[in-house]
Image 1: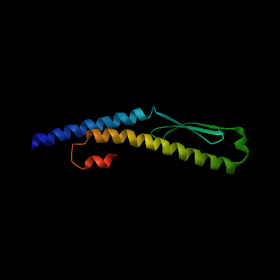
Image 2: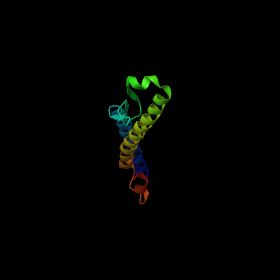
Image 3: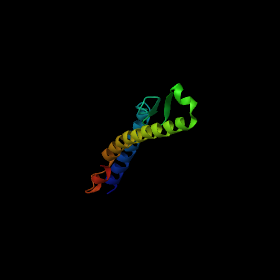
Image 4: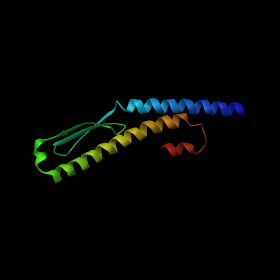
Length: 108
């Protein structure tokens, strides 16, 4: 009984370390997104940290338009980054889970 428990605890610690390493690696995965017309470009890490922002000069004349561009483009980039992050961390978490019937459907 205790052997199984200790084995599970070791597996949990190993999984925690893999999650930490995956989060660190996701800092190097870049997500690029542009507005439809290419006037605004953003780059985020898969951990949703903004790395760069490029704004065409034509957008600087209309504050409201620039705000709209920022909201739309950043939201698209954040959505992509979140999908990448969830897929990567989900795979690590699933790998570290004990084989319990029915539990595998939680990580699909």
